[in-house]
Image (tube, rainbow, N blue to C red; front, top):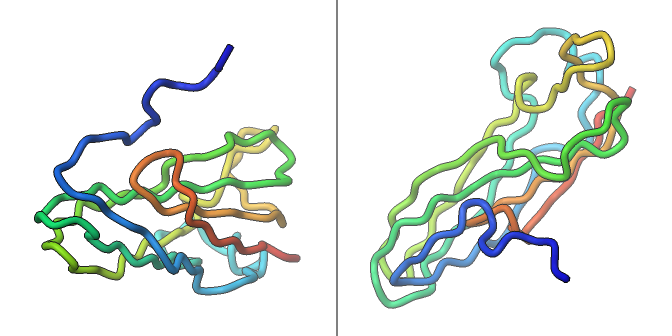
Length: 142
């Protein structure tokens, strides 16, 4: 018996189709000292992706950014929604999307209930639902 949802989070119907490509992160590594030096709103990593309307009608898409922290001292969800943008595109039009990840988006609560960033591996996905397949990754290093 299948154990997945009938419709993934973010699923929606449209009169056109969209394609995501070229998901990239601004840095392959992020020094832990820089990541933890302050809990400010400053961007630590920028994620970019291209969204293209591949259909023959104008349409609106909600582009979603999901993050996974693999290797943290406390188990983390497989994918966490950390950003989204509502974008309207004409047929054949494309747009470069950017998402900024700061301390708030990359940190988690450790066993002492304090928000921290640890030296781990992060994967980010950009797409139209929680089943997004276009990804990139980076590491937080000591």
